[in-house]
Image 1 (tube, rainbow, N blue to C red):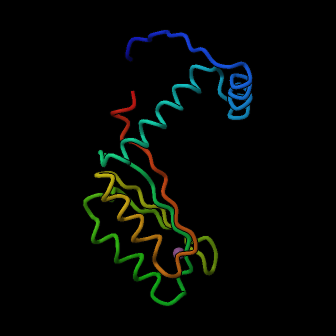
Image 2: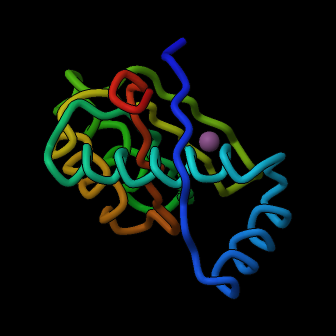
Length: 138
Ligand code: NI
């Protein structure tokens, strides 16, 4: 573990009160942990913006009986083998499928994969959870 460094932060009282309320709401045990997470979130966003090596998950909801959807959802990942780590398919009910695709690699490439999948006609909901490989965020 890296050496811990203490530093003082000055904040307007109302802002600190709102921060403390947020911390309680999110169930952080202390301000330091909440602040660490805020900093890491910014660093992760920068990794994605600047096209660094990232990790994330793409989540899709679609009706497998709808015309062409299944074949498109199945075909698209073949063009992005380099960044796909694993895929999980869950049959939610008679119609709906949940697909979770874990990806790691160049941010632009992972984003292109997410865009290609979420824009498929018949994909009812597509989201990307932008995370990190963990190496750059302490
Ligand atoms: Ni299914």
